[in-house]
Length: 274
Image (cartoon, rainbow, N blue to C red; front, side):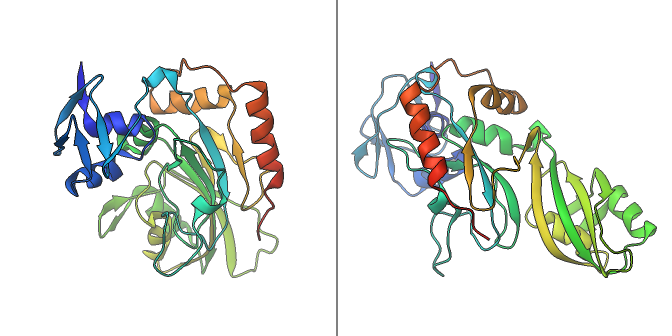
């Protein structure tokens, strides 16, 4: 049975499908000794090279599907490298052998909160695809006079430069002072377009002064995971994420006791950042 090259390599944890498609276009991938082209398919057992080096591909169900929850602080980028030398979220994650963490979507530099990472490119791709309709919830502090008319507009939909957008739900947050110029809200989106939460509020003449993602689908940030810390999801939680993506459960074995202890040691070493 043949499959598209980018799907096979993504499932192996080498990167997201989008990243691998870019590698193929750049001439970095060979299959069975031949330069790969976008749209090419490969058969089981065919050799693969990336940048001239052989890639070891394992059958999908031989590899355990791993998912990491990270509480991103403000002031980190979501790419692996930055020309400006800013800190990357990937610098905070545990190191892997023979695999790498793939980010499930992004948060912008000044946005904090929940991010998911996985070693399974197919899972990452499914979670990011609009067809899965996974909702994202944010805590947002807005500066300005928020009227009922504005809230109604944001629920009904606003035309942004890249199309209509709206919040599927808006709830008032906890505000210490009624007369404060800053008000907290919890808002929910069914998609993850670039800076969408900020742009929606800005379309109403308001300014977002703080923004934090607190939920992705059924996954919340545990209170014990502080900013700059991560936690690996257990098998039951990984199954919840797989269900959200509409994927079959992983049949690979769970972490062995020694592996679990190693993960716990790594987690204890991470200090929260403010």
